[in-house]
Image (cartoon, rainbow, N blue to C red; front, side):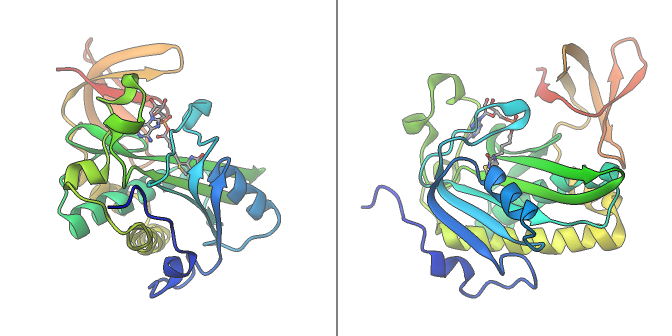
Length: 266
Ligand code: BT5
């Protein structure tokens, strides 16, 4: 029995079926945050599809500088994108990443996944993947976007996570009852990511969102949304073509929310 698999750098590219993504891969056993590393690479001119991947992160980040726990056995990587989109369109790239992970977990491993606005993938209501999209703009032009994906793969949350997160998070190993090949998971996600990204560029975000919404079990449900200092209660009606969450509030009015955290109300 092995405690964790070391990532094999060669295997990350072996048989990779992409045109651009992952043609350059930067790998470290330990890294602060792959998003910070990818941003540095992008600033130095890295081409679209460049990947930064770490076996473990000491400074993994979520949104609003929240800590992202990144033990060995997880899939922690970031991709440099140079989309020909406006900043408001590029915000939707977070859905492209969520859809890629959801489809791979469902199609390759038979897991029943859900997407949750804006950046989560869940299994049995627990978070298995989070996405951090960071944009660098100049005026109304997007210089680059770094898309960071964290998938809890080969570890058991009850063994490595703090008490406060044990109920809210899960891992592929826990849900499948066995470990997966990290390099194969990486390649499958990267391949989906490239094809979803290309579809998004060709057919628009609405096309991708329609697929993302098929997994969005929170739609139609009563939710609580925390957005900045506000707490909103209502029914999640839709995610509109700009990626905003549309809520029906308790007074019957509708409200669009651009950023926030959703939890289900039972
Ligand atoms: C996210 O933020 O979900 C974005 C996570 C992005 C992680 C990737 S890993 C590769 C790349 N490099 C980085 O530094 N980041 C990206 P948010 O929605 O704000 O959720 C953060 C919250 O999720 C935390 O406050 C915890 O409550 C919880 N959390 C922390 N680590 C977790 C984990 N491994 N699995 C599930 N939940 C976690």
